[in-house]
Image (cartoon, rainbow, N blue to C red; front, side, top):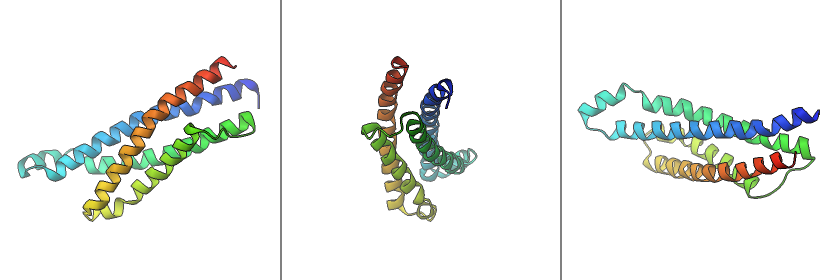
Length: 152
């Protein structure tokens, strides 16, 4: 692979992940609005239903899941192509953990749609853990990008 292409691929994963972090924040916002819709007084609920927050949360959440899985594997692929190995460390392990957690959180959707409160609480807890790890990943990812940039 030509050096310029390999060098540019190093930055695709971080750009994608920063965009995904923002999209995840939007999914969180929609989830909060969906809960507010479910728990609101009847008059306020009528108004909130128009926002279709639950449906939008489901669609954006599905997109976040797909992009996180593909983006994570893409980041590992680029690392392997450029270095002939993966660097097993906190950034990689936390990223793999996030992929597993978000997959489990998404798998709870059928029970949440049936009104299972425990599934809903586990879903929220898992996704808050993912968001916390994601914020840490953003910081550690910038450190990795700086290292790549200075070693070019």
